[in-house]
Length: 431
Image (cartoon, rainbow, N blue to C red):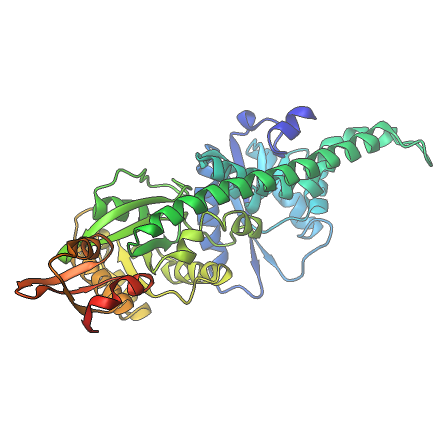
């Protein structure tokens, strides 16, 4: 049991032995036709990202959920039979399972049974690298595991006593719950400290105000590749879900020497566990505080419309959906004419780029410059010759469009953040 807790209460007894998975998709009456198949394809990729092979799958049409096992008894027998025939180690449900349903499935099947949420938690745990991301994942997994602790103590169920003399299993369970509650409290305290430290770093950046943009979008849409292509960065960019979880900020020099700080954020996914949205609010905070968003979509993805809607919904949960936003369809170098046409119908004013070939990146940079201009506005300044520190500051924190040396001083036309207006106001001629 100690190992169970030390591994943030992971439910699999030995992940190294889990090699073959059987997936169960669920098509409910409220889902669109074919949606279960699309979600099952996505679940397959999620499971394979854990290094587990998918050897079989089934889609269950569900009219009414069964409280004990989600699906009816006939389907339970069919699913277990298929999983055993294929010698599977784990059954993975695309639909969320309650702790009781999970316990019932494992008791009946004698196999490990998990759901989509646990798969995503395991992937996040495997990918997290910075201290903050590690803490956030650990917190989400602890909160997920709390109601599932009894799974580790079912072998002691017959040892329970009566009245005040409760058995070993019950006593140990209460101890473990207390341990998990204490660890949750400690993780939350540590996260507050890490977030305060990151807040200090952000304030230091704000002392030299530079416009900021956050790249957001569905996982594997090519956000990191786009950041690398725009800024020359070397952020990890792999063709797999959640390749990187930690936000990375790089400086982009736009036309006219305009500076822009661009941050790559964690990708979204359909049915993202709500606990992870809460746990990663600090990581996604860059999307909240940025001046505008660059919403990246994979133009070749069959479910690109659903990917767009998922991202918008998560942004809504973060109160970031009102931010100015550029929609960018990536991977046009691999797109068919039909896919490009579908994308134009979905978002008529979107931009089309390729992080691989560089197509459309100049147009994206121009649009970023236009957004900054609209946000910061433009002003004409006349700075005396003895105040070249003002000229230097405008170059540092803003953007100089024109500069001319006159007898009475230096005439400039440029933009600067609203927070700097008090500093530059004495020199403004027109705005």
